[in-house]
Length: 318
Image (cartoon, rainbow, N blue to C red; front, side, top):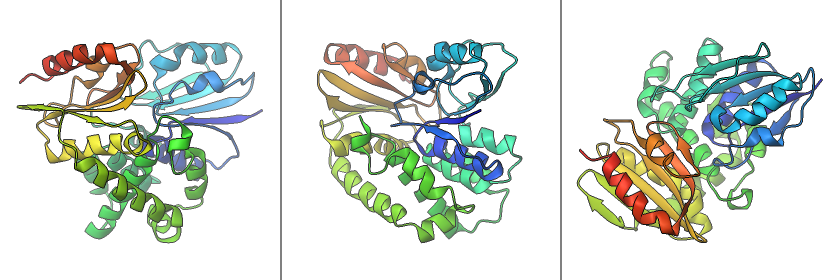
């Protein structure tokens, strides 16, 4: 019998797994990757009696491989906050899915565990750009303002580390980052003790300085679109940069595109006051998906750029 932990490489996926493994320690096969690498179940070749824990990857995207694994006799718990499509009905599958705009996978796990490792869920919510949900959750605990700011920075640097075209773009493989923090019950101890944190914090600041000098490719009322160059720093920073401009301009929809050979990678953030429509927009394009407030397109061909701009403007017209 083998255990597999299959998780998104961002702050939400890692912190969701951290909560579960603090509560249920076990050795497992770790399956993860860059943030946009979500077809993770296709890498898993488990058999009868094996147990899967799946965290923060779209069930819709992985439905075929999930059905394959269930047919092979595996047991699976599936925690996620993305639109799932049709959920298979199978006695070996338990799903914990909440697609509300203020939900993230770590907050779902926090409810499942009745708050026993809540500080990590707060880190994840901050990392997933759900500041209001993070603050609301933190209000149930006694966390002073300074420590709360440190948890927010940790969530941001963990999320930043997940963005890239390939693992080579990242500072740390997400599995290695999880291994570094799994021994810490308290995220503040991780911040105080691990050089990994300072490496990521300094790298994020450097990459953000590069992005913030760029003007929008266009800015019209309550919509803005940025285009970043084809560079490793652009691929690392575009998610955090998208979150940051969403915080600075909360009533504006933002799209951040990163150039790549033949097209772009796209991140979309809906206005914080109207946190819907990002997923519907991105699913209009072949490799698009996500959630209502924040979504993306893995590859937007150069020829589709004018159509994307037109649909972006239409989706978020006042």
